Length: 280
Image (tube, rainbow, N blue to C red; front, top):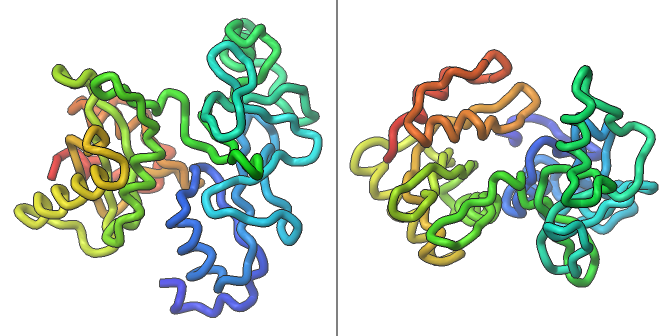
């Protein structure tokens, strides 16, 4: 699709809303940016009021999938469950240690919820909890966002981040996009459910079963047998807001086989929900 247009005027590219996996980063860089446009892969939230971790285009060496280093003046860090810094190369909770000008001040009418949500007692009430897991490169110190803290799955006692499984799926040449969530399972505690968009047309019947098994084996090879998705569902696309954020809370409801009762008015493509109800 990008090849249909003259993109020679592009000078800089940006990505927000979701962690971008290295495969997607390279496609974006080469296909859309022509291999010449720096990608500003940013971490920020509505609550932060602006970019928190971001490369400075033309100045920061880029690494596919990494949002690189904190914006000047932002003291971001990765800590363990007790609020202590972890060594570079180890994952943990993404926090901000010092206030910044655009930060959220409170929650209207509920200051206690503000404190509990963003400045938890586990961290001494002094660290801003972003709600994301992250890791810093052992050599460069670059940050890579691994996904929401509540997107960590516990399958038969093994803890895995959904971002890790999504990246494995998207590294398969057949896959354009993937989102992974967990659902309750009597045998393993949690089961992995993957929603997949292929680069080709959505498969049906025996072809869908064949491709699903191929993708399961692919993930097993990339990560390990424990990471194989139990459910794989194919769609023409994924449920997203108009800003491009995947609505994982809706995918969790679909994975559980429940009816969606939440508001879907913010979705760009609400009709896709019906399509994603069935497994391959």
